[in-house]
Image (cartoon, rainbow, N blue to C red; front, side, top):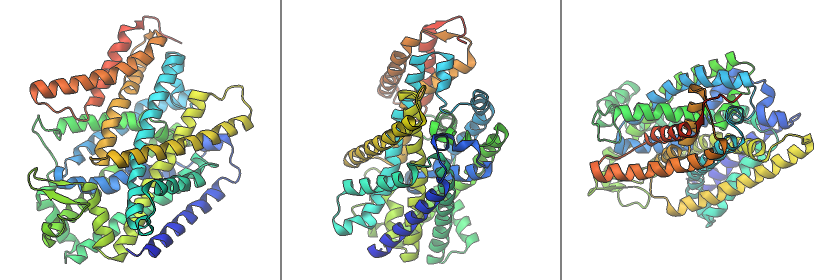
Length: 496
C-alpha cells in the first residue's frame, strides 16, 4: 500500500482524536481524569467498551487463529458472557456502594494495607504486560505498512505510537477516553464489515452464499469435547468466565469506565448491553478468519507459503505466524480500499484498548501505590503526569523486548500472562466476598507470589506424568491456591 496514503490516514485519524481530546478536556481536573466526574451516559460507555475489549489483538489474532483452532475461541466467548453477568450482579454493586475510585481500595478495607498494595501491584504487572502486547500489534502493522519504507527502526515506531496515545490522554484521562473509544469502536466495526463485503465480492460470493460456505466449512467447527485438548468446551467456558471476572470485574481499566456512569443502574445496563453484543461481534471476527483462509485456499497455499510473514508447516500440519495473515492480505493483496479500511480498523482497535489501559495504570499507581491523601490538587496532578510518562516509557521497553523474543500468537500470550498474574487477585476477592474471615495481612505478598510459582510447577508435572496440557484454566487453579493460602493464614474475626 502506498506509504503516502498510510501517512495521510494516520495524520487525519490522530488529528481527529486530538480534537476530541481538546473538546472533552477543557475543564478537566484530577476527578475528570480518574472518574470522568461520574457523569457519563451508560450507552456511550457500553459502545466504547466494545473497542476496549476487542483491541488490536482480537482484530488480528482471532481471524488468524481460525486456521489452527477453527471456531473454538467462541467457547471462551460464551464463558465471557457468563462472567459479565456475574460482574454486573456481584462486583458492580459493591464498588458503587463503597464509592471507589480505585477498585483495589476494597482490599485495604477488607484485609489491610499489605493486601491492598499486593492486589494493586499484581494488576499493574498484568495490565502493563497485556497492554504492551496489544500495542505490539499496531506497532508491527505500522512498521510493515509505513515505517519500513523509510528504514525507521521498530523501536522508533514504538516510541511514536505511544507518544500519540499520551498526547490525547494526558489531560482528560477517562473523560476523554469514553468519547475517543466510542469513535474508535465505530471505525473498528466498520472496518471488519467493509473488509468482509469487499473480500466476498472479490471471490464472487453473495452474502447468503458466503455465510452458507463458511458454515459448511471445517473452520466453523465450534465445540470440542475431547478432554485432553486445550480447546475442550468445559475448559474454555470456565476459563472464559473467570478471565472475564478478573480482566473486567477485577481490572481497574474496565471498571474505571463503569464507575464513570451516573448510577449503579446505568452501570448494569452498560454491562448487559455490552456483553450481549460481544456474542455477535466475535462471531463476525471468526467469520472473517474463515473467509481469509478460504480465500488463501482458493488462490493456492503455495502462493503464500514462501513469504517471510506467513507459511504452512506441513510437518506440524498447522499455519505459522497466523497473526500476520490478515495484515498481509489486507495491505498487499485485496487492494487499496481494503488496505485503508484495515489500517483504520487496526489503529482504532489497538488504541481504544491501549489508551484506557495507560490511564488505568496511571490511576492505580497514583492512588494505590503513591497515594493521594493529604496532597493538594496541584501535587496530585504533578504526580499523575509523571506517572503517565513513566508508564509510557515502560510500555515501549516491553514492546521492543516482546518483538525480539515473540514466537507465539499475541492473544495466546495475553491469556497465558493473565492466568498467572490475575490469579492472586481472583483468590483475594473470592476470599473477601465469600468468607467472613480476615487474614494476617503481612503474609499476603508471600501468598500471592508463591501461588503462580506453584501453578507453574503443577502445570509442568501433570504434563510430564499424564500428558495433560494445562491451558487457560491455570487462572482458576491459581485463584484456588491463593484462596487456600489465605485460609491457612486466616483469623476468625471479620475485619471491619
